[in-house]
Length: 320
Ligand SMILES: Cc1cc2nc3c(=O)[nH]c(=O)nc-3n(C[C@H](O)[C@H](O)[C@H](O)COP(=O)(O)OP(=O)(O)OC[C@H]3O[C@@H](n4cnc5c(N)ncnc54)[C@H](O)[C@@H]3O)c2cc1C
Image 1: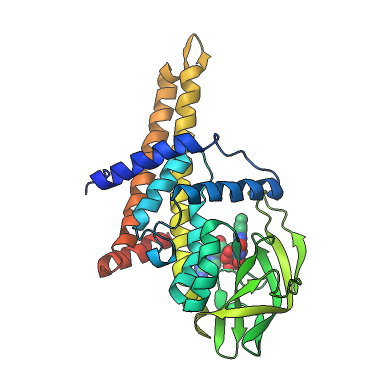
Image 2: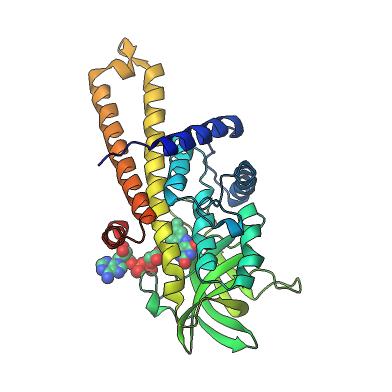
């Protein structure tokens, strides 16, 4: 199999790399607080949107360019190597549920502001009693006119300052997906209460929180009882983005290590010329290349979605 960029991909990569060099302000800092990260994230999202680099795989009707996920993988690879925040992933995960299963009215109302970075969304699935095993979720929704009132506890909500949350809750028809705004249409706060921020081991600037919903107003996304189906494509893209993000970070680590060792001397020579260090650099470069190849192979499987064999490969390899 030939893993080199096609001429089209190579042109796209060169175009994005040139844009990135002109538009980013250096590697994204290691944020320690969520307010600073959030401000940076929103500004950077807007810069990428203005550059025409967001929503590449979205339909044209909703502001996208109808390109394959491979183009987004190329962008993420370049962002990772330059050490710049990935603004592509979260947008894609969350927009996808509405793109695939929202009503036309929901698509028209929500997708453009999401793409422009004017609104931020996140997910509220995990609960104290169920994480991987979504069928065990116990938050429930009661019909209230055309919409629902949700009650329950979400154990992990990153990040609670968002404008809206995709939430799973039980209804008489089974597990259902909802969109829950933080602020109600009349300007008052939804009944969504932050209980505490998680004291996580890492990823600390991401304000993961435990939240309680007490008759929180929400609208259904997709069909009642088909909540898992509504989020599964989004979850698959989340996993692909995790692969892309890890491959990008590895590329960045190789770039930083080779740069550092090419400028640091020890025992009378540059570190990059010390035989043992050459071994170390070669080792991490090979691992990074292998991860990049796997990542492109997986993104390609998303491209060839109608091919049954590729669909099986995607299902198997993403879960790993
Ligand atoms: C940084 C961070 C941010 C997060 N943000 C969000 C968010 O925004 N929204 C949200 O909804 N959730 C979020 N989560 C929660 C995350 O989605 C859950 O932690 C995840 O779904 C796993 O659930 P759990 O922690 O309850 O683990 P469990 O489901 O209890 O699993 C515990 C362990 O057992 C393993 N396991 C589970 N089932 C099996 C099985 N059948 N066979 C073998 N092993 C198994 C799991 O792989 C895991 O290692 C976040 C988590 C982290 C770490």
